[in-house]
Image (cartoon, rainbow, N blue to C red; front, side):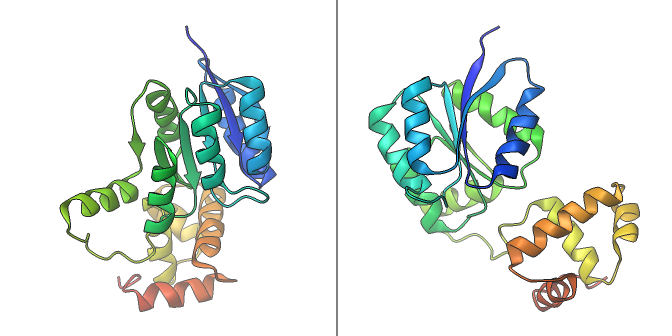
Length: 214
């Protein structure tokens, strides 16, 4: 079995920990180095010569876009998979122009991340659903239907919809057949992505966008 050697870059230690924990259970994937900023990423890649790079975009010293552009020349055989919270057109197209081979939004489930790693390492290009829609629109010249909170995953959107309808975590867990701890994690992610301080503010934003009308 061929092992895919991976370098992971993100300025948040817990994000790196989560990624490496997921990949530790995969017999054909090995994390060989971690980096907390773009400069560390370039140094780690040129030191370890990985088969694939996973990087965020918003990092100190040298951001992900700059690091990807530098790696295209320093390590052209190491494809880059972006894993970030940023789903705006500017970030997506800047990353692709810099040389990224894949683009996923944080909140992607573990199985999708692992599939993306294997696909990108094999030479394919992989884009999460929101990113694919933007790319299609850019080539066809048609804009996709506007969707509020494009950074949210489908599950986070479902949680937000029920939260906006007034359900508490235990009720959301029962409705979606999830553990209450999982719901709490989704709610925390939603608050971060919506840039609000509490669930009430998130519910107000969601209802203004048409969610929660059950």
